[in-house]
Amino acid sequence: MAQLPPGIRFITSFSRDQWYRAFIFSLTFLLYASFHLSRKPISIVKGELHKHCSASHEVEVNSYKEYAAQIQPVKKPSNISQCGWEPFDKNNYKQLLGALDYSFLCAYAVGMYLSGIIGERLPIRYYLTVGMLASGLFTAMFGLGYFYNIHNLWFYIMAQIANGLVQTTGWPSVVTCIGNWFGKGRRGLIMGIWNSHTSVGNILGSLIAAYWVSTCWGLSFVMPGFIIAVMGIVCFLFLIEHPKDISCSCTPSSSSKTFLNGTSRFRVQMPILNAKETNKSQDPEMQHLLIDSENCSVSLNSNTVVTGEGRHGTSAISFLGALRIPGVIEFSLCLLFAKLVSYTFLFWLPLYITNVEHLDARRAGDLSTLFDVGGIFGGILAGLISDRLEKRASTCGMMLLLAAPTLYMFSAVSKMGLEATVVMLLISGALVNGPYALITTAVSADLGTHKSLKGNARALSTVTAIIDGTGSVGAALGPLLAGLISPSGWNNVFYMLMVADACALLFLLRLIQKELRCYTDHTLFKEH
Image 1: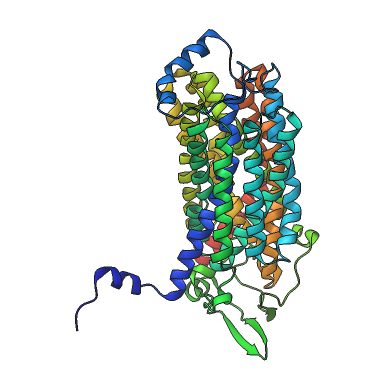
Image 2: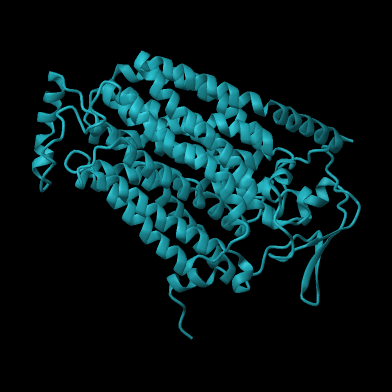
C-alpha cells in the first residue's frame, strides 16, 4: 500500500474535534477583527476633517501630491473648506471630534450592559449576524455624508450612536462562543493569541481608511462597512455556537463523572484530595486558574455537587448574580481605567502623530499601526505569563506598573524623531494592551465559568458584558478627556493616562495580595 502524502498525514494527525476547534478559533478571530476594522476609520479621518491652514501644511500637501496623482481623483464637493470639512473646520474642532468619539463610546458602554443579558436569551449566530449587518450599515452611513455633502453635526453624531449600540452584539457573542469551545488551563495563551484580532482589525482598518483618506474619505467608511456586512453573512452561514451542536465531545475532567438520566445530563464532582492529584488528574484545558474567593485551599469542597450541564438546563444568571461572582467588580473597575488608556490611543494617536511629527493623515495612520503591532505581542505575552504563573491579577498588575513610566517616556521621546517614536509605539502598545487583552478574554471567560456558578454555563455572556461594559465607560471618558485636555498641551494628556494606569493597578491590589498569599500558603503546604 502506497504511503500517504505528507499533507494528508498532517490533516489526519488531528482529530475531528481539533479541526472544529481550529475552525471556530479562526472564524471568531476574523469576525471580531472586522468589528475593530470598522471602528478605526474615524481616528484616521480626523486629520482630514480638520486641516491646518498654515503654510507648513501647504508644503506637506505638495510633498504628498505624487501619491495622489497615482490614484483616480474623486470630485470633491464644491463647498468644502480649505481647513477641512464643515463643521469640523472651526477652532473648536477638537471638542467636536471628541463629541463623535464620546457619542459612539457612550452608546457602546450603555448597550454593552444590555447586550450580554439579551445575548444569553437568543441564539448567538442570529444575534451576531444581525449586529454585524447593522454595523456595516451605520459605518457606511457616516461615509455617505461625504458623497451627499452633509455638513450637519448631528447626522454624524447619530451615525456614531447607532453604530455604538449595534456593535455591542460582537464581544459577548464571540467570547461566549470561544469559551464554549476551549477549556481553562491554556486559556491565557490561547486567548492571548486569539485576542490579537483587536490589533489586526485596527491595523487593517487603519490601512484601508488611510488609502482613501486624502482623496475620498467617504470610502474610508464605506469599504469597512461593506467588509463587516460580508463577514456577518459568513457568520450566519458557518458559526457553530457550541460543540454539542455538532456532537463534538467536550473535554471532560477525570475528577468528575458524567451520567445520562433520560434526557438530562448531569455531572457529579468528586472530592480532590490534594494539589498533586489535581494537577495529575485534570486535563490542562479544564484546570481553574482563578483563586477561590473564600479561601486559598487547594482542596475542593468535599460535598457532592450535582449541576445541570445541558445548554438550556439552567436559567440565565441575573445582573446582580453576576456581580456577586468573586473578582468581577475588581476586574471591571480595573478595565475601566485600562480601556480608558487603550481607547485614547485608538482614537487620538494618528492626530497626535500628525501634530508632533508633522506628517499627513495617511502616513500618520500607517505609523499608528505600530501601536497595535505591539499590542499583539503584549496580549500573547500576558496570556503566556498568566498561564505559567497561574496568576491573572498579578500579571495585569506587573504590566500596568511598567506602563505608567513607559507612557512618560513616550511623551518625551516621541519629540526626538521618527525612529524613537517607532520604538516607543511598540513598547507602549505591548504594555497598554496586554492587561486590557487579558481581562477582556481569559479573565472574563474564567469568571463566567467560575466554580461558584455550579455549572451554569449561561453566565458567560452576562459576565463578559459587565466587565467589558464597565471598561467601555472608561473607553468613552478617555477620548472625551483627551479632546478637552489636548488644547492645553499633549503632555497633560499623557499625565492623565498615567494617572489612569495607576488607578487600574489600585483596584487590583486586593486580588494581587490574595494571589501572593495563596502562593505562599501553597508553598508551605508542599513543604509539609
